[in-house]
Image 1 (cartoon, helix red, strand yellow):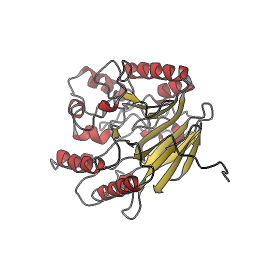
Image 2 (image 1 turned 180 degrees about the horizontal axis):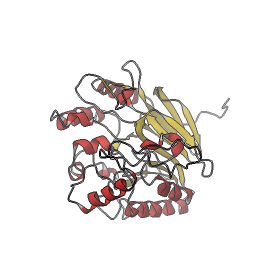
Image 3 (image 1 turned 60 degrees about the vertical axis):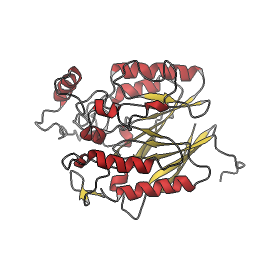
Image 4 (image 1 turned 30 degrees about the horizontal axis):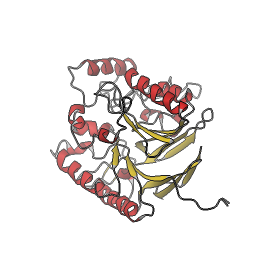
Length: 336
């Protein structure tokens, strides 16, 4: 039993992932194994907002881990209308929202449109020369809620096909990369996954699908410099992205294309304490043995029954994060 005296947290924040709202009847995932609650996902967001607004202390900010509306809005011409509904609800909360871009944002809007939209929360970045990457088309930034703690929002579709003009150099380079491993005509269909237990995660090519992406060298170089600074300042850093990067927190079909490169950067720095992602819809957790970094994949709202919930509130102390889950999300303590 924890007998430490009660102490107020240094700060708190909320986390929610994969709302995927659409004003349509329930459906199923692509393999028809999990039910998707498109319309009532907005009600579950309202449930989270009500909890955060009534909590004490209230969250200082919210991390929205991507896929805020569903790609099915596109065919109905409802992308803007659906986004307006979700953002209206998110704006009613107690603090600012840091938005991550997932594949469904990029089904609905081009990257250039997203940069000009309310889903671009770079305005919340640290106003410093290293607050954002040098390349303005990378959606990544850092911010410090209190001294000693830093969060880095990562762009896991910086390398990818989604949201890019087919004539662009970035699109063609990503297409060449994915077709090296995925020989299917439909690039949303994963390559055959290897069931051999002796095949490493990096050799299993199931992740090379159109609905995944990766991190460019420019973004990784920027992250490396951010973490070097954080190391020197003895800060505790949480990385936030849509795509998981640890093989023990997802099936290989949902990993970032170049997850090993990002893991290598994490392993070369002492400042990283946590990596948070969405995308998978089924929650998962693993603490890396070599780095002690906590890797959390959040449960998705879209596959959460209306009577339940899928969000958490995180209280941060000098030596730990305490996650209070709601509904499908488990309570956890991340010791630093």
